[in-house]
Image (cartoon, rainbow, N blue to C red):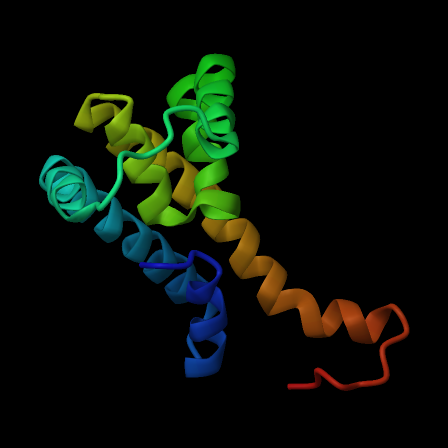
Length: 141
């Protein structure tokens, strides 16, 4: 739920097949998306209450978020969530832009399905690719 690439790594460590790993990874991301999207407003209020100083309105991080939002909207946020933002970070960003929950869920699900299969197959096939392209066998099953 916290780090997207952790799902496929954990799946291979547990001995799951790639389909089980892929579906578990997607379920983990979607669980965090649902949790954060429903608790998002409350978490923002709680965070603001305990914050000692007013946050800078225009930092490099907020400028990047606005740039992604203006260029690609919710699709861009969802696309970058597993790669850069983490499921929690991407959902917080979407909630902060006041995106409709059903739109958040649908875009994040599409992103999780796509990136889940990419990461899962990449991690499951990594030992074979390393061995095929001149590896010294350090990743043998």
